[in-house]
Amino acid sequence: MRPLTEAETRTLFEKLGRYIGENIQLLVDRPDGTYCFRLHRDRVYYLSEKLLKVATNIPRDNLVSLGTCFGKFTKSQKFRLSVMALDFLAPYAKYKVWVKPGSEQSFLYGNHVLKSGLGRITENTAQYQGVVVYSMADVPLGFGVTAKSTQECRKVDPMAIVVFHQADVGEYVRNEDTLT
Amino acid sequence: MAAVRVEEVLAAAEEQEAEKRRSVTVEKELELEFDLGNLLAVDRNPPAAAGLRGAAPGREAKLRALARDNTQLLVAQLWELPAERAGGAGGPLVARLPDPTFRLPREKPPPRPRPPTRWEQFARLKGIRRRKRTSLVWDEEAKEWRRRWGYRRAGGDPARAWLAEVPEGADPEEDQFARLRREKRERVARNELNRLRNLARAHRAGTAIPAAPLHPTGHQSREELSHVARVARVSTASLGRFQPRLPKEPAETPSRNAGKKRRFEPLLGNLAAERSRQLELLRDMGSKKPVLNITRAVNKQLRQEEAEAAAAKRKKQSQRGKRGRRQ
Image (tube, rainbow over all chains, first blue to last red; front, side):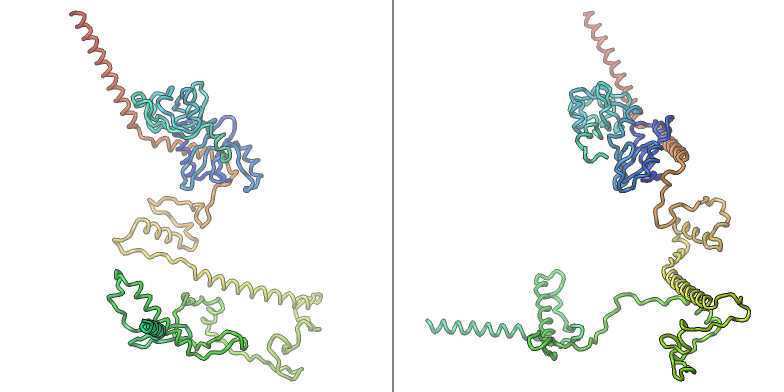
């Protein structure tokens, strides 16, 4: 377990910034306690200082997970955001996409969102923008990246992909073994 | 009929015999040179140049034939060596190889001379030369030649010394035997320390990284210049600590990663400082965003065009409609 280096922090913030913009400082600087990011076995964990102090008592080989895992760094130092960050990022999301009830299940199975399943989308969403995907009942379902900007979404045909799937809450069941 | 067949069989048998003999005898223009100690055979015959070129079709077969012939000659030479049965009558036949004559090149580079030790430097300075000592000394009590040191040394076994005189200026209460033992231990330790120091010095001298010399003007790269400047800065007696900086030289703190091992921030270090550093990083990243967002500008333009097109369409429809009503 160790703190993130400068370069790693930058990569992490760039990725998070794609979804929540400048609201990252609300994650870093919280009024209700000191929270920090720590790296353990290439995975980034977000935890409070209290929990960190307790976690230092566990030997490195035996430590599996601590706090919330936001994602992991790949071998080439790219950051992959995982669904476990959803609870922290959903309240601060800048761009949101609502999915119709019919294609909720499709998204939760790992498929991309088609135009036919698109309910609502925030105005002024650019192309390839990181978004948080909600159901029509405002329940966060996961993350995505827009394939088309809002303007283009209006014109495109119903079978075209509008949001690429990145992570969804169905992974808790599908990838139960590999999520830490 | 039968006679012809018998002749054929005999002819075939003779062919086979000749073939066998042919495979054992090899004709060469120049004799090979043999070094049986290394199992080496050197063939100085000029090879058939055209047949062995890179693209020649029968190259593999020709090479294999050449190798086979030379190996045959070498084996024939080995068979002519004096042989004996190893391990009694039933053991295998073993040839005794002569000493090798061909000198093989070194496998590893020759060892470089070690730097002189502190004593060697001093001795060279003072002109002290090594005097050869005799290994045996005349022992008066035993009336014979004894070793200088070691088993049955001249002067008796020091462990069995039953008398230790108190020297002139020494404390009368002090235990002389203990003193002798302690001094011996100290001497041994000091010698060992010096030996290890010399060893370390020799080892360090061998692995010192020489500074790359600067290219003559015209070929100097920026990295080379900065590296040489850094080395020159640190080559003072206090390792560059009190070296004044040039006007535009950046103040370089010794990075925590100046070494072979990667170093990280402490795990539970100052969390407030960490937080402030991260906020600063965020601010830094935020300020670098381009003021003009191309896609947003394009989208805005598109929206504008759409709005105009819709307005024009409505106007046209309303006009047409009015015209229609008039008619």
